[in-house]
Length: 132
Image (cartoon, rainbow, N blue to C red; front, side, top):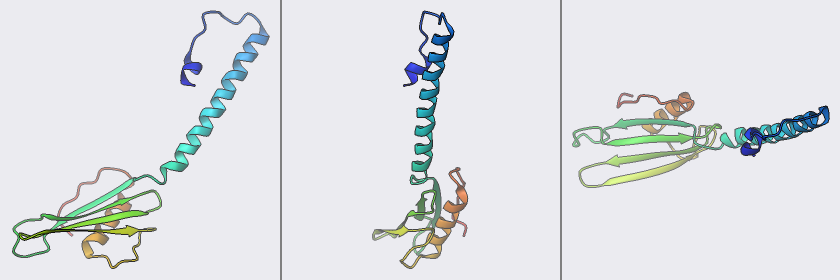
């Protein structure tokens, strides 16, 4: 469709009828593009738009902030929060669904922080650190 809109015919319109026909064709193409654009805007709400992350140290015997929680949310604050707990012996990963910014599962403080950071991010890159 884009080729059709931007394609230049070698012949110039010779009458008002040909000009009006070209305008009608452009108007129909514009209506199709507008409709497709509106559909994309509606679908965008359901894609990941907001990201929040926090690194932390859950265990005193581990030397640095190797653990993390990351929240991935769409435009309706629905998505998932993923938490990785690192220790010298193992690494555990948990995922909890998020619906309208809430989870049916108990959230850790770090998971709540990640979700709040994601809600505030509004699709922009946000610096995060291990501070709570």
